[in-house]
Amino acid sequence: MIIGRKKEQEDLLRLVESDEPQFCAVYGRRRVGKTYLIRETFGYNFTFQHVGVANGDMKRQLSAFRDSLRAAGLEKCNLPKDWFDAFSMLLQLIEQSNDRKKIIYLDELSWMDTPKSKFISALEHFWNGWATARAEKDVVLIVCGSATSWIVNNIMKNRGGLHNRLTEQIHVKPFTLAECEQYVRFQGIPMTRKEIVEAYMALGGIPYYWSLMRRGESLAQNMDRLLFSNDCKLRNEFSELYSSLFKRPEPYMAIVEALATKKIGMSRDEISSTSGVENSGLLTKMLDELEQCGFVRRYQAFDKKKYGATFQLIDNYTLFYYRFLREVDVVGDGYWLSAIDSPKISIWKGLAFERVCLWHIPQIKKALGISGIISAEYSWRTAATDEHDGAQIDLLIDRSDNVVNVCEIKFSSDKYLITKSVEQAIRHKLAVFEQVLGARKSVHLTMITTYGLQRNEYSGIAQSQVTMDDLFV
Image (tube, rainbow, N blue to C red):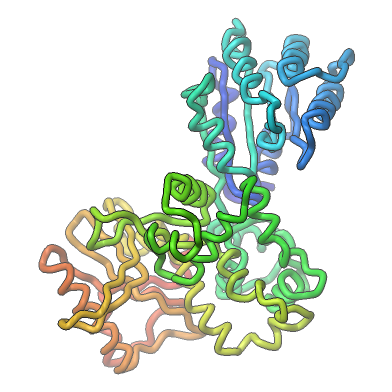
């Protein structure tokens, strides 16, 4: 059973309805469910399917390709001498196939592109020189890979023979909270919505991570087993994750490590000085790739829209890694259970809930009744001056109807109580923001909390509320 992914499935099935040859790239980060989506959508029925070999040289890649051709029914199949020869054999397989649509599925494409292999040139020749020239117009080529940057740079942004050849691009994104809830219900795992949110804080919406949850264990027990036990499955996921995405992962990891130190994000100059990565075209390329992979979001500073972007780390698992897992001494059964009520974890939950909200801005807008209004979303900060003490806002929704929603995000185990001191802090923040903004737009305070606000003499400061339940829509 596929959870969610309705649009992605529709896009895939539309390929076989077309009267023209189709070339589709499916991309997304490791463990997000790309391969499962494609195989389930087509019922595991392909004219040909092949998965590249991790860390295999050209000879090993070609040998595996030959094995896949044989498995698909090409009997007379010697070891290809190069990729042009390999695709010529694939051509023979397609020509002998009786399938109405010849669906060719190539997974982990970047692994096949070994040094000096001319894989891309051979793929270009296969598509341009034969697949699109075939009178039957019945070839559907689907390429996929976890190395998102490779797919984007070599297929989607190809400046050679594959330029503008794609007919469809499908970005498989992490699950939303609603999809995670559907998944745990399907698995028969009893979890409250608050527990699902807390799990999302650490795991994000990565289906594979959620598949490791066990029935009969509490959330804390699952967290200990998956992230903190001596033989846990996800403790080493960090290095494997970045190594699978980037051929030289070290500078990318240096960038995300720098971004992990500042929750509201950094400018290019700040990233460069903190990470040690030179502020050049290479940094631009790396930031673009991190954004394409869903690790980083880019936004223009609200009051400095002409002065460059701010980059913010939003990948939940990466943030959890830097907060907890990198510490060598934090390992061993029972850590999470023993520390569950500690100030460190309580502080982390507050920060992590903000990231969860950033992943669910469409749901927040829907709860506010502004889904149809064009908007831009920012985080905002201003340093102290002689006129004010400075302020920081984690989420602004700048609307085209001349309203700005200033969102205060609070995670709690019960209805959130706005005390006198909290109200004063919020009023100060609003005053500083309005001073910087001027009289250009109306400012509405939106409180985003787990269970809503506890009514008292201070709760009226909020014009609108969004609760945890609203994020599950």
